[in-house]
Image 1 (spheres, rainbow, N blue to C red):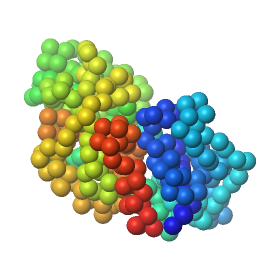
Image 2 (spheres, one colour):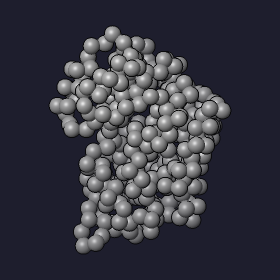
Image 3 (cartoon, rainbow, N blue to C red):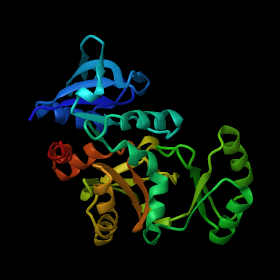
Image 4 (spheres, rainbow, N blue to C red):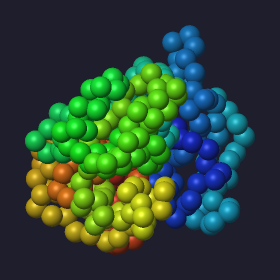
Length: 312
């Protein structure tokens, strides 16, 4: 079954083809005989009842520095396509949110992965609040005194932007740290969004586990170990991926959240688990496919496409 697949993603030129999950998803689609079309989020538009995208028919190659070819630029009606991938990276700002509203007009006749309505309503650091028995103590707040009260109770905390990504702007504030006021001033000067505070989990030194779920079922995990002297384990900031097995606790977490993810059309999801605690449910643009495939020898991208083909 050949499908017409449009991919809404960040610019393709600078991606690391040996790590980028969007590249791997598109590569697998091409191998399965699907037609590819690529466009960036700024090229989507709504006019006269149609949702269109200006972009290029795409061919991929696993050759560093020569990993893609584009045909002539054209404008397509996304309603004429079988699948649209929503794959640009956060920040989860109004630009990102607007694209989900536009894609709502074509979904589900055109299958948008992940479902844009629930991507918009279930951003990663908020969705976990539905599973408080699985998560460390967490606060969402903008008011400084409220954040201070959380730190007074828990002492050692992590403070980060609510809609950030890739480990940017993540701070650990230990019991004797005096920087909460300054950090609050810094974030308040950037935007009007709340912050998220979580109790610090010392087990992060052993790694932050990324568990990948396909259609609500776990397919494997990688462990992301922080660089020496770092609290953050994100691979964007030097975290080292390692092979790891799923534990009973991991499976317990996945069993609790999987049915909701499947029901809400979240086909490809990456959750973060530290010391047996669920810290994030990544639905916007999760990563980790290529690392998991190398460690476990499984075709994760193939499993994703099997789920999508079944839905189409």
